[in-house]
Amino acid sequence: ENSLELASLLCDIDSITRKASEAKRKTSNQSLATAAATNAAVGAAEKRATAILLALRDAAFQRSKVETRRNAVNCAVGITTGRLPASQSVEDKALKLVSNVLYPKAPDLADHVVAAATNELKRASK
Image 1 (tube, rainbow, N blue to C red):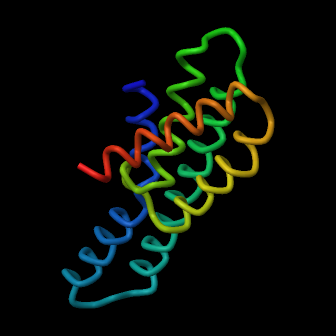
Image 2: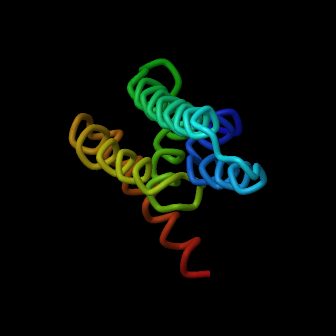
């Protein structure tokens, strides 16, 4: 579970965007190269986040280890709810993954999604 949560932390595109904006402000001369580097960093972060969501999907659908499946669903739901840091666009993609792919495809995954969502609600209510 820890490795999946660590991987999901790569979905925090807002943090990368914030750091890139700070770097822009620090340079007195915003050049075309700085703008290109910022756009490249954000684009790479989006690709990484999408790859992480795909890895979570693949881990959820593997059949050999139930605990890995459960942890992948927990991470996807955690990204969806905002417990694990991610940009709004990644949270939206995670929501689509959970609601359109994981939940309807298999009854045991649907049970994991419901359990994970219930746990997130309990965490939020504390």
